[in-house]
Length: 279
Image 1: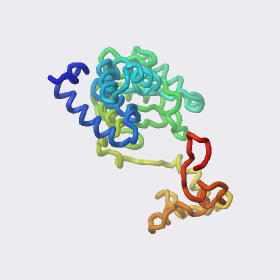
Image 2: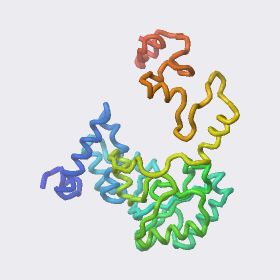
Image 3: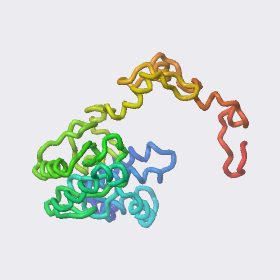
Image 4: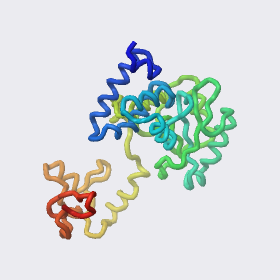
């Protein structure tokens, strides 16, 4: 076993696989340490949480201290510092979802599963979370399972969903991918490795497109804008121009049409941060 593998705590095979994936992640960035966020998802996909071994691995690969890695891992809630369940069930309890029943859904699930916020069921199947916002207010109240949407939920529907997950049944999200993957598999996707499911399922649904339909029906436009030609395909004048081979940059409403006020506006030069002025 190599010295690096021994220091990381991983076996030789696991270390080699993680190192290969890490090299692919680092190659995406001009600065090596910028790879830390996806790397934390990567080690989480291995261990099911950001373990001590994962922290040591990230630090060794990036040439930074374990304290620096830990500072980032403890800041973001998607990084778990203790073993997570196979499925993270997140209930939105932000304002709109709470008014529509989010608090009742969380309370019902908590009692049904016997766990509280960020706690995991005894069988290791579900970690329950209160989520500040699922960014799906048009479908409130919303529950997410490993970041896949389950819209317009009720307490009874949410508990049934949890029971199906614990029973090992396949469940289909309301929108997005055709099925729910495990927490480890989703962590690998968040690390930037495709699972081939990006084009599955339904994207924007009726509630999301309602405003666009109304704008089309009434001929409403933003100041200086033009009415969309298509709703369901989400095509706009800019999108049609791009399809025809024209660049959207410099089109109407683009910042590129603004009258230049500095040399950088006209040349595209970037500021010299060390001097606090344009070069």
